[in-house]
Image (cartoon, rainbow, N blue to C red; front, side):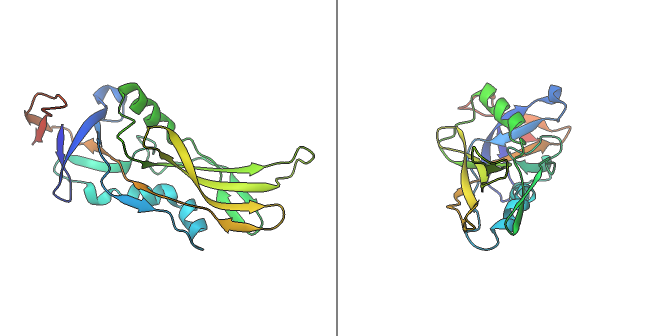
Length: 207
């Protein structure tokens, strides 16, 4: 279907969840709508900790309230985008939320529908931080702080934004710049006013 977003651009979208999902009807763009970079400086700790709300907020400009009641970044929890559950990891002078699995529901649905790969990289609203251990110790010897994204082949991967080692060295990682792929929850009462719903002739929406 075609969706007129909040910036005035018409986006080709696909239904990610239908009305039987319990999430309402949610549609996802079949392209990225911009890019977002991780901070490659001293703000990385704050950005990582607030990444889920930050990446969800980056989609707000694309909400058209005529058609959709809410918008979120793909990879957040479909019915609770701000949610995350992660142990806090602390080492050296820094504390970070550990890994969360927010991406799983959307990732599995994208895979089932065959729309995970759009020949572009895009963020998912999920993080991955972990300790490293040596075989002789139960104490963490290193840590890696990462943010997840989907690569251009549709595979889940991550970029490192911060690292810390037992030697006391630390540093900002490579980070990355990737696209934003919004998911819109349509309002009830939205109508199909044209098109046949195919890839070549998408539905158009009306009120």
